[in-house]
Amino acid sequence: MFAYIIKRLLTGVVVVVLVSMAVFALLWYGPESPARPICVQETSNRCTDERLANFEESMGYNNPIYVEYGKYAKGIFVGREMALGGNTIQCDAPCFGFSFRSRALVWDELIERLPATISLAIGGATLYLLLGIPIGIAAARRRGTLGDKLLVSSFLVISSIPYYLFALVAWLYCTLVWDLPVLGDSGYTPLLDNPAKWFAGLLLPWLCLGIFNCTAYTRYTRGAMVESLSEDYIRTAKAKGLPARTVVYKHGLRSALVPVVTIFGIDLGILLAGTIFTERIFEIQGIGLWGLRAVGSFDLPVISATAMFGAIVIIVSNIIVDVVYGVLDPRVRVS
Image (cartoon, rainbow, N blue to C red; front, side, top):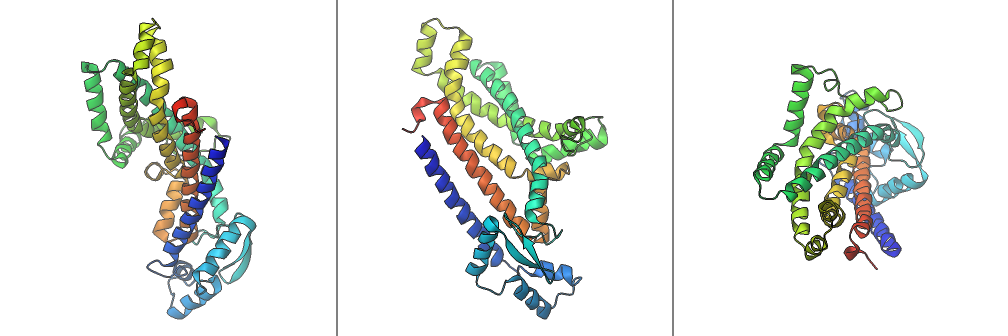
């Protein structure tokens, strides 16, 4: 298992390098010069061709792409000097450059917004697991009953609604129409500053993520439990006279959780990479909203940093899922 983890980590490093190359190339060969946004900002929307050429030269965009990518990669590990607005500034490692929009270090802005995204992602993921798995188990144990059919049908209706519309309607009613005292005050406050306000500000986004996504996890868990409870070893356990709770939760659930863990690992990685719709609707200053605004303003350093961060988070979450596989089901352990 240890050798397998090392192999996956090495593969993950290769994937991150390829992602960084692809993002850098896409931005380099984009529809307009990478130096244009900073030129427009510095010249108050009077960026002529001559001024643009001067900015491209000062920022290195007239060099070959492999030279600039080498500087970019070097900056991540050891730092580098960067030209910004005619000045040369030292950017310490890990250096992802300076934001064209705010002129701040991209790494500092990422670290500043990371707690909001982590709080939102972990809270939402915990809620949809706590809701989805127990409901899925209950539906599987009552397979074919009227309650099972009504539950599956209602959850299919909820999951067919686009998430952004679901979250937007929840925000409109809880905030503007009903003006609920706790749910209507959404936003992010650092946990250490005010724990009560942190919880109250994230409660409605958590509920939106939890209720909407638990519908999918209910279906996943129900399907896996139905298949697991029909296995021969389950019938053997029942024949031995084991209690129903032991058969379901100790023997059936452990096997049924394997596909659920797979999906959860990917979903949690995507949430940590940035919950764009949730952060935008509830104005939570996280990585998703930061990246969305960077795309709108063509803030290339921020776009590349969010893409790199997302790739790393998803790769690490997949490696963790592979390790958990062996704990939940010995049949998938790697010798």
